[in-house]
View 1 (cartoon, rainbow, N blue to C red):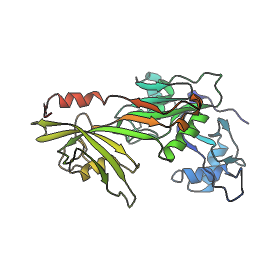
View 2: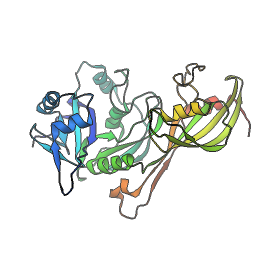
View 3: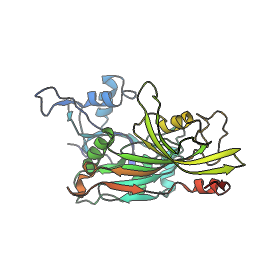
View 4: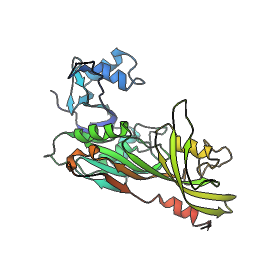
Amino acid sequence: RARAPSRSAYDVARTFVARVDAGAGERGATVALSDALRAHLPSEYASATSAKREIRRKNVLVNGTVRSVGDAVADGDVVEVLARIRPSSPVAAAHRAGERAVALARDDPHFAIMVKPDDCVSVGKGSDPMKWSAERLCATALTPTPEGVEGALSRPRPVHRLDELTGGLLVCAKTRMAMTALSAAFEKREVRKRYRAVLRGRVESKKGVVDVPLGGLEALTEYSVVREYESEEYGGILTLIDFFPKTGRTHQLRRHAKALCAPILGDVKYDYASRAHEDGLFLWATGIVLPPSATPWRGEDCGELIVDIEEGEKFARVLARCQDLA
């Protein structure tokens, strides 16, 4: 097999864990690599020709090794698609200019949990190619996997996503074992998450569940009010609240906050009466609980991994100008 291209010449485009549906009695079922690209990334590879072209360019890796058009993938294989960085591109210039500081809540040879800034997308380029993405930050902010650890990815990868305007805990894989185990845990909804937000308005019940379908799909969010504030600046009550999403729909917390008649501060998309805030959206991923199955390298008796952080500094800045109603 061919070796992976030089990291300095390439940037991450996409990563996914292959899922192959085997029929009854078909153990070890596989699917053509080009078909896997089309199934997992349909918006980028609409035809077999485009998928095969990407593979022929040697931009597609399976378990860290460049593969050919005739190759197949099995369930659980980690597929990476690389994209060449042009030396004159803004992204390349940003890398040459230096690294952006990122806080880490957890970092070991197999995975890390970074604190994503609230001004960058998790993966891809987003609306502004001049900006960093969390995916690119992984390559510079995380401690490299030691050479003795088997299955190191060519670069660390986020295994889930946070919206561009949401800061906080983002789980990233460094090895194939971590990518497979963590991705499965998120896919099965075995990971518990907590978000903190500032809402513009009062929530009637201090604890409850928002059960409002989104896009025709079930969407559930548990919540617990932390504290209330009186704010002259924002014309009424601000509510500090914790959200515990049970599903993962697009903009679920922002839309469920609106359903509570108390939209998130700074959310101009779902709060039509709100103005853009200089500190952006007041939504932060502050807690995550990973089941033992998500981190098998820690041992059979490792138990759950619980990680909690404080919300972003902008929360304290805004609430310091308000009257605490406790």
